[in-house]
Amino acid sequence: MARASATVEDLESGSLPPVCAKTGEPADGFATIVFTSTPEWTWILLLFGIFPFLIARYFTMSRIVGLVPMSDVAMRRGRSFTWTYRGFFALSALVIVVGFFMIDRPAIILEGSVILVITLLVMLIGWPFVWPTGRVSGGWVSLSFVNERFANELDRWYANR
Image (cartoon, rainbow, N blue to C red; front, top):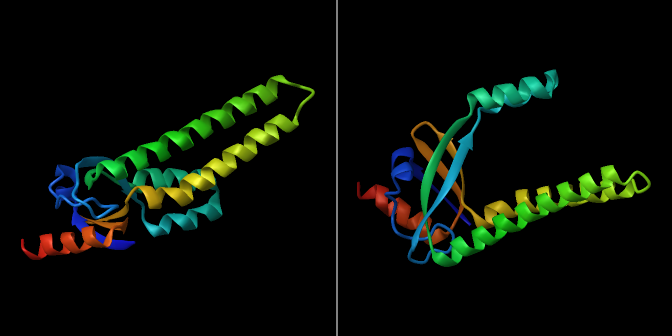
């Protein structure tokens, strides 16, 4: 996987080269992806507790909604992945709730918690392989986990402007 950079303005308007960001094939449409970034200094606030950390991260977050060119194949793959982990989140919540109502079966809560943790890990590890990720920095978004052809086309796109 490659890296590339695009301006916030181009991402928000969807005016990027018509090459799929994940497969490198001609793009059939756009995926709406939220790119967020927070300053690195917020991590030090974990020493003071989780709430100061979460509050600082929330108020210092840069967030943009970008339109990234994607092929139909990549979009189907992404939607399948998203619906799968959402389903497993719902399953884990259901198992945990059922476990709370079954007093004589506390292991069910543990099983629901295990499903939840595994789903979180699969989501965190699998997301970059299915959707492009990015980091907002000033007027640019540094895109990661994109196809090499898309990165090269994006470099040419900005070289010609």
